[in-house]
Length: 498
Image (cartoon, rainbow, N blue to C red; front, side, top):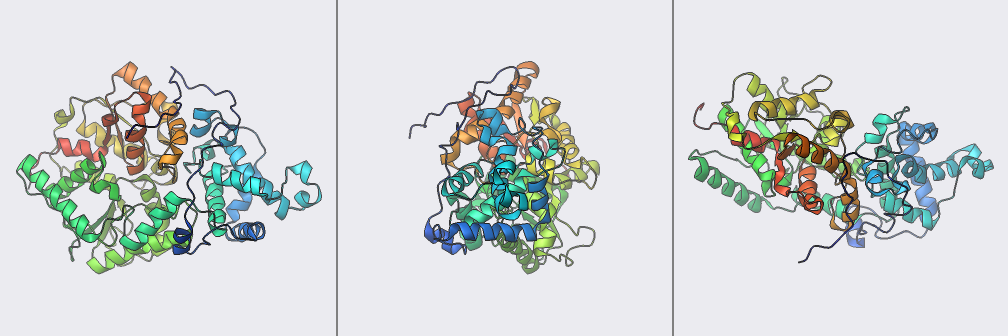
């Protein structure tokens, strides 16, 4: 089928602040969830008759539940520090994709119904009633936020637009205006344990095929066990790792690392997904139910330790929320009471001399690294500040002789989102995804031109899918995107350390 044509931003030798293009992305709207899907998740099937009252009441409930939300809605002084920090504004010029303007869609309603000034003199404080027109703007622009939190890094008050977007999406679901993509993924995960709807038989068949591929390539029998009771470690990884490119090459890399370390490990067919889309819609109920699958799988299999694969928001869900949503985890090995990231595990092994690696295997590549937004700004690694930046780079510098970073304003905590996170990785939002990818593509093009970069590694399944899907539209090769453990996979010397 022919690829649909969209306008693609021109990449320059720098990243300019765009001229305002009012309503440039106002026409790009997520597909709504169908009534049966909404009802299956416990939401109204369609927009309820008394939607205004129920939306306001839900906002009041969230203000009581999350004190931070009220602080974020009260604290903004319109300083403009966030205005040019969002990749969707930088790529489109649509002023409603400035974080402050996106926040104001909810803030106006908050002031109207929950502040004295908004009730007495609404025009003086920018308070507005929740109309159907505003509700439609919520639906459009809160589904054009990837919840990457880059704006919060530059806000002098630390206002977290991601939290505001999550609250708005929770209200929209509550009144029957859910988004098809995220809600379909959540339902699949509830029913089958993963985002893609792989049943246990399909999962086993897939990993058996990977075992055969590894044996054919290396002559070494490397196992990818499923539901193996008594294993020491449960690996929970994004389901894209089971078949998508380049994710699957990363999964093979994990398996080779575990094999050379002599680790007893298993996958679970019940909890075969690390991602947690409940976070994207702001629903702690769904987050808890999805996280509980991991806890049940760990208990049923009797594992002592949990390792999370390469997935940005999955790592945030595990690092920041797993203990509170589905703990206690006191049945795990006291030495590993919290989930570990696969990069932490691999780097620890490298430091201990536990892996035989030959970096010349990647000498045909000049590699750079894309910091995914959730590990960068919403999680950590290694138990020290900045570990989430150092550890992936340390691994890359060990398995690649040619590594360079992109411009310092575009990496580490200042990294740009890929443009597909937060529930945006769906075809109807392609114009938004293309626009949002511009800042990363501009930084990548710079190191390609100046330093000869040929590949960009990432540790997020969504980033990898977004890049491989959208890079051709910028005239770039999608195969230059690689999993970090794909490069480990290339370098590891099987048969030398068993």
